[in-house]
Image (tube, rainbow, N blue to C red; front, side, top):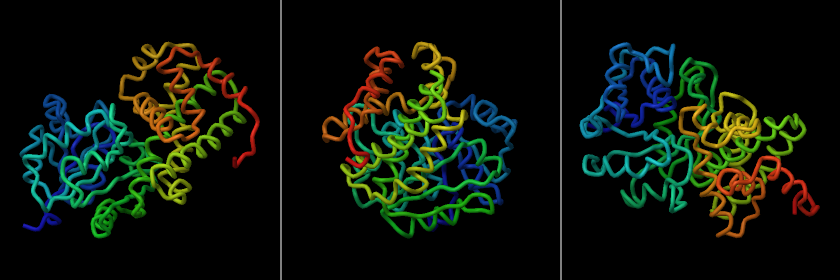
Length: 336
């Protein structure tokens, strides 16, 4: 059977994975959603709602839930991985024995691999080789809004034009618009770095620094994102689009962002441990700050905002000390 006639399987039953699965199945088209917590999957299937991550949003009848990953992969056409970045490689390794050569892999995960600093497409290549059709889904999205049908736009970047078009066609509806790209590197960098910068924006607001400071952080943060993207081989135009500037503005300015909320808590005086406990979900920017800081150093890329976020998270710097470090930097041309 042609893989495109089989349901797409979403691996990861968190908020964003569930939202994508809802989008795929909302118009009666079959889709699958796998989660590793069988109790959570069983409960969600029984009440037809992911109460923990997307309360109040019903799961379409066409969406099949499963706690068996091998069974899910075997029954699916293409796969979309939507797990946190720290579980990305292990999830791919779990499906390596079940996947067939015709199945294509997309991911809606944002970040770099912990420890290695690899981009996620590099992890896919490590496990499945360079010839596998792959794609990344990214952009300014809050899962709750997308799942409820509020207007949303994303970018799908792929090494295979047919795959990006197929994903765009499957996800696209009257409130969810999908743009395509071939710049996997740029889309991945934008989706990862914006989380670190959102922590910085939250810290500034938590300290009561106001709109001027927030806007300066977003603007100079975009410059950092573009410098790293250049160094890694991304396209500069990508960072002015949905996966760059769009996602950056969203996560830096709206309190639905877990990364921004973490920064607010840190700026308000909470310890990192207590700030994370208050959010009680994965905050991708914490791990990403370490990986991006190390990448910047190894590539000789100037990323002062990112570095100060790293110092607050890992080196014991206080938010006020981090801000003072930024303000005391030598004056320079804006484009220098």
